[in-house]
Length: 290
Image (cartoon, rainbow, N blue to C red; front, side, top):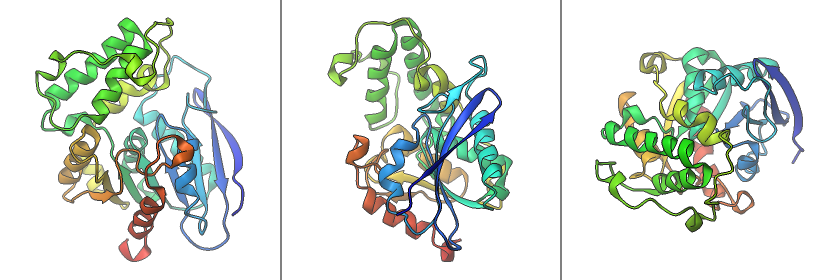
């Protein structure tokens, strides 16, 4: 399997780093995108697509992606523009995109603005809070994590984030009445180091979960949009958001193996079932399905 070749590109307020593994042939290239997860999170999944060109990248402020202007807020619109610029630079024609979590939010915005660049988008568990039937409760929990981060730092806020991601069911008013999880339960520091620039909680948390999708633009896009969720996370926030988005677009979510990180393997530290995940993704991306 060919090695990835690393490139960089300067964009407004940042320098992005992206990797391209070029494979000869006429198969549609595949872009794998996360946020704030960087390219390293797709190592296992990418290995199962050795028959097509694969692109991965580090979003601004993540991994090798640097922010040269820290006054610019990291928003889905800004991330979408970053993806657009990378695809223009590559000049490969329309690509297929598998995007997960915040990456799915950013890819949805890319399709809203530049549908001609994407043949098929598989949007895996975008955490779009406003689409949830329990939106008010979910926003309160989301805002509490932000407030905890600003007040107490990374450990206490990240503990609440991890608890939220794994919680199954609607977020009712009594969710915040429960005792807060301890950072030590997750191997996190309890001390506040004073920084507030964490790539998730300090840069992307509010803008990503507060994303307002242009449902009309998505419904009318030339891009085929497949909303995806995990079989094991259908009751969790991101899985429920996927179902809500699919419903608003007049479709049903395609379920993939595992949970929110089902595409990752042992090398990423969150072993799901990347081989089975890749098999479903390959089937979804078949030209006959387009």
